[in-house]
Amino acid sequence: MFADHEIMTFGVAFSRIGMTPAEIRDYLDFSTFTAMELPWEIFAELTDQEIIKLRKDAVRSGKNIICGSLMDSRLSRGIIFAEDKFQKDFASQLANALQFLASCGIRTATLDCPLENLLSSEDAQKDMQQILLTAAPVLVREKMTLLLPCTIPAASPLSNALRFMRNTLIPGVKLKLEVMPWHPDFAKAPAADLLGNLLFEAGSVVFRYDADCGNRI
Image 1 (cartoon, rainbow, N blue to C red):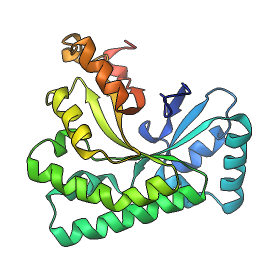
Image 2 (cartoon, one colour):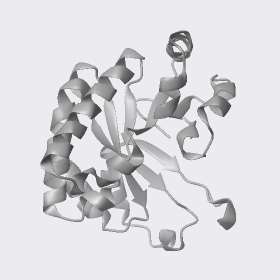
Image 3 (cartoon, rainbow, N blue to C red):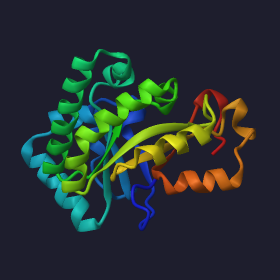
């Protein structure tokens, strides 16, 4: 997993493995990993002193903390199908959440709105672009990265995801490539040149593990 094109880091996505914030507390050190993806909920539960310590540890060691699933996932996944008023409220809340993370020293976060949803229609893409434009000033001012999940293999052609990113052109908005080596369609890998272009739009790469299918990373 990496969140900076200049520095490659390897970490664990705690926000994806079903651990509670209380359980994650025991692993808030960087003795093993150089990056951690933490769920949004943990930042609400940590005390100011714990957040300060986490930030100092990360800065001192030069390591990376990512916030996963920014905002409520159920809301994020369906917001592009909501009415305009709700989308504007969501965009405002997103900007505020990013500003809060910046105050905690967190510079990378994931918005759990899969590209499969965005690519369902041109209207959905335009709605998300408007939401992202509202968050853009915070991203630029605080030098933050907002990640949009994109699975490999994907339900829709990856060329569509690449086109969406290039049409959006908002600084700080990047793809979060979620690779599923165990998926039956993984063997139908996209062309190498397409994957190379996707990496230019990526801010993070996550290898997902399915225990029922065996470890095929």
